[in-house]
Image (tube, rainbow, N blue to C red; front, side):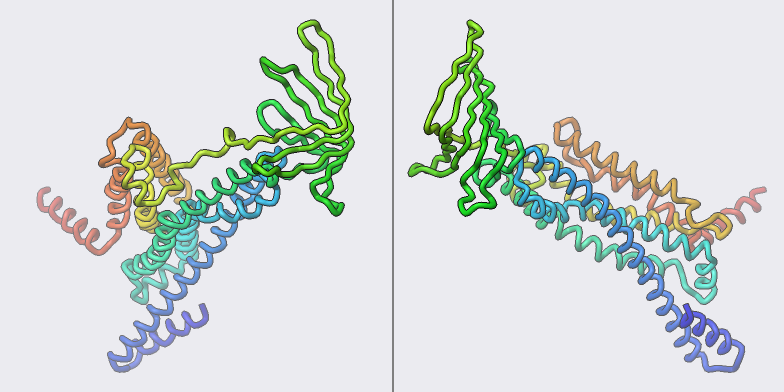
Length: 404
């Protein structure tokens, strides 16, 4: 702000003296450019801080979700970091619009509450210049959003499902850790007191228990062994071989139990294909969405197109809302701005779900939401207090006086 005040001083001094008009114009241009850079940097810093905080919160929630799945044995613990990194583009699609929306609201609101905007207007800084700065930031965010929603986020989500399904299909990727219950399929659960990760042979396990709940043909059973080994056979099947243990079957229909002793017992570990994660619509590319033609795919395609438009609509909408009176404070219009933002996404998600279920036509579809908000909020809010609006209002008052 020191450089800014210097420009103000030179401009006022030049106006007081008999300085050439050209120098006055140069001084004005330099002052406007300095103000533009100052506003641009402030909004950009604020957006970066808000984006970082929001990403930290949602990344923590996602991390807890993956850790919970890993603790249950549904995914390997080694995949948590990869799955977390692959979640970044999807979360970025939601955090970018919100961070820019709040950054404009807080930064411009701060300028107005501290009377800086009044000083800027006094040196000829117009509302059009402010819209231009915000438009540059919108363009950058829209470009990032298009790349993420169109290409990066679908690929990352597809890669996530691919990694999880590969882990579920490959028993070796689901590490049988010590002190954990591992569900092999619907009927069998394995518990190991001590695996062989610390030994030379990582496939060797000690004190292993296999619980089978049974089905209509087989009785429930518990198999206990002091030593076990996991390995593939020639046909590519994964086997768990237990050595020198006991098997307890029962109770049967007569409420009797059967105890067996074995030197070697082999249990086939089947692939858990039935429990694999299904592919989502959000993982499909734009070409796949266009070729499919189902209502769900059309809803996803429209949502990807609407997201960049949403950034433009909401940010230009919040710009006039951030113009507050210094006496009101920078958060005077925070609540109505947040209500408008939340209502926009609630309507958008509602239309998307209705289109996917076939309860709402594909056209106008989700495009109806940005159109309505642009007509009802964005355009009227930006017309208020403009030069054209003030001229029209003065002409209207004059007409009313003449009519009276």
